[in-house]
Length: 172
Image 1 (cartoon, rainbow, N blue to C red):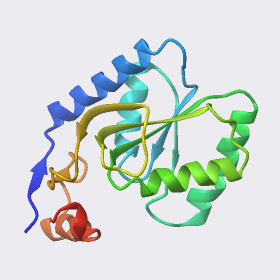
Image 2: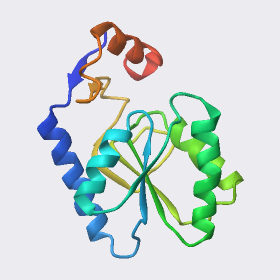
Image 3: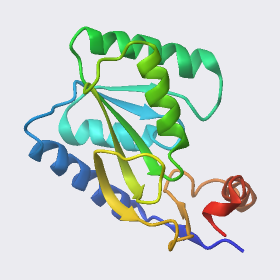
């Protein structure tokens, strides 16, 4: 049985402030846009956008609808060739599968190396992918909780359990 761990709104906001501070501290790299990764990164992207005063764009990887995932990545890769820097934001770097897909698609579309970075509210050190910024770090080898973010908390309990069960090794 999975352990469902709610992330209260005040902890979510605190995580946004942590990410904002890390971005301000990094004087060597400044993004031009925050890219919310749908679905879990959309709300954090809007909050971070307000916190640091940058515009937000989005890609919807979770829906697997190519018009809203792959095509925008081609446009975003072009923006890097025009000199822009992009910060992709999601709720959790769990297995790294989403990041692997995005990095691969961006590279295939000709994104400029060094112009794309990733930030997460929660980073799993056991993930296949490393990221540049996180508010919190866990190790999935130890922490098996299914984190329920504020925007997910409105879903029926059965839907949350179904999402958690999609990759059982994360929570087993």
